[in-house]
Image (cartoon, rainbow, N blue to C red; front, side):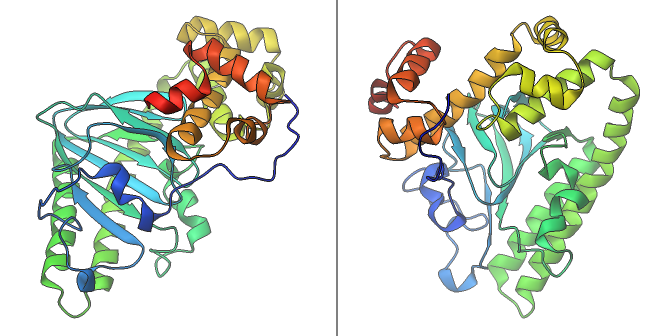
Length: 310
């Protein structure tokens, strides 16, 4: 799949044009930014409760960071190749350029979510250091965490303090919101590091290899499409990687690579009017016929049929 045109960018939503994708039309809930007067809003930052949230979204990409906090109920979330179900106490994290989606939200689901640009916390640390300081915002990290009751209560409290600052609009509002967000991230990091230490001590070699493979595919799938590419990065043979992935996940390594390509294709087909021919070149297929064949094999329908029904 050697693309003829790799200059066009896959679309990635920015914060100011994202609301219509995640909020139900006509919702008037009062938490956070949902019904906030324009003069009270802080550039580069938004917070909402799950009241009025659309029950499904994606797959798509965004150009900002996202924290999703579930206090009750449940929803299926997919970040790259990693899938899990949010339940009470679950947090998940997305970062710029990551493909994500959610579905199957139960009726009793409640929580909060925060969206912010990379430079929003610039006074605390440079934007390019955010993933290093908070590793759950990077391909190298784990994109979700399960908090105990004390930790999730503390996180929820910071969300409510942020909402209070937004609604009151007192002097120093923006500084206070940034401080509460930073404190929230620090609270999460403490639990995250403790859990990662435990996982490192209990992971088998095969589990670690498959986890690293999934993260690498999520990061490089547009330019590396052969199992051998990832085997080389991981220092194993292609046969060993294929066998380990199949034994651990039930699917082949090549199926995982195809799955990431399919998510990317669905995101472009669903949320843009880019032609199928142009999408095929964006995804580095040699021609539109190859992309059509790939999409039909993966979904049982043509790209245009998927776009019409999405």
